[in-house]
Image 1: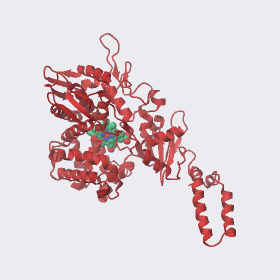
Image 2: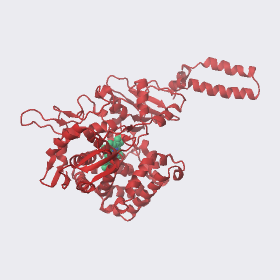
Image 3: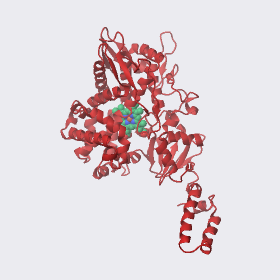
Image 4: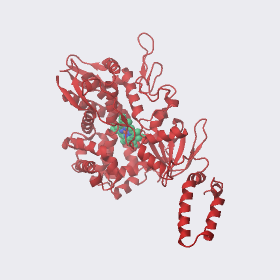
Length: 562
Ligand code: HEM
């Protein structure tokens, strides 16, 4: 129950308002009273909104940030106008580690401190990831209402058990993509496919002029579709869908806005229609039976819960976004960061030699060795993701609860509030990463001292410690590295992504020279951080580059192995 005394004690001139309104009947008459009263109430609400909202808040809730310009609409407009940058703007103005933004009819809790991100992502029983993304998911693939009913059923284990489409699909994806034989099998196929595609893209002394992003899009889409969806995947059956998938990706916000999309966003809308038809065919013709265990299990789950083949096909479009949506732009930035810096390129070429076997014109890169013996490559990967990873971790509060962090007051998170952990702000906070937080430092994740779960530290022959890539630089809390989110819904594809991206980049570095259109060193393009992010940051403009085989590599046939 709301405490009415808080409203009375608000910094609102109640007495003045009461006197004004009660004197109106003596000063005005008829319609004038009504008109004056309406205007007076609108103006009063506008001037006093912030005080009233503050009064309506529980004193332990995160502090309320006043609306810029327009009550109720100010923050919504700010988010649309500035995209992910809006968190930085609010943070610069307020410096609160956690705060509340009142939007039209909801409260968004912004979190810009890893200290509070950690307890929020731990509180998975009081928050829901799916509760937040359900509407986006529906719009992304245009699920019908009967399918949404199936998807919503027991979404957050509210029935006291773990059955339900979303829970079972989540467990299945997480288990197949966890380190183990199934993941290794998928990574092996994927790496072999990459090598097959890259070996033939530029031959002998050819010079290829193309968009660097397109190179990554085409190779990743074809290879991932083959590895995960099998030899009879929709992109193999209908090769024109590779381009259509990215046409949809480029315009999906306009399609999801759902304002006559067949007219206002025709190209991406038609692209989605074509992909959905092919995915439906993939299910109806049972082509998924020759796909990876990941897809065989997923399709079995969606059909078991009653989704029609058409809707089960649409569900796969969501996973395709998970598989490709972040991995492709991440690989693009990784390549751009390396090929734009001659010194770094040279060092990575030298370092990756330790993972190359083979003689003459047959060479093999071992990706497991890349992870353990090439700290600069691994560190550059992690640093690239740090600077482009600004996807907020979103959660819906399903149970009112308190969160606390060492040395900070505890805060009340009320049921129904939406939480957004602003990864972009945390990734570039000097208080977390040091004074060079905003700049690219490829050696940031290298340490001579630390051993980590993933990359072991070995003593070198001389007795001193070898350099190793660390999960995190010293003193950076784990919740501060958010490229893959965190908590119970941390990206299950992160191990697969690491193998494919390190392998792909190591092969490009050893096989190709990549330069600007005029033959000079390529530049890192400008980042487009003003969009509403549905994936990592994209470039404002996708640069065209010249790609050729390195001197001496004209005839080499490369392989990638795990
Ligand atoms: C560099 C590449 C990638 C990045 C940066 C990335 C990032 C993310 C992020 C930030 C989330 C949301 C987590 C949260 O809110 O806490 C996520 C979820 C997810 N990712 Fe990734 N991802 C990548 C690659 C992949 C790949 C290759 C796959 C599949 C093979 C994948 C599958 C998924 C799935 C299925 C989810 C939803 C998790 C769930 O439903 O619980 N991701 N990813």
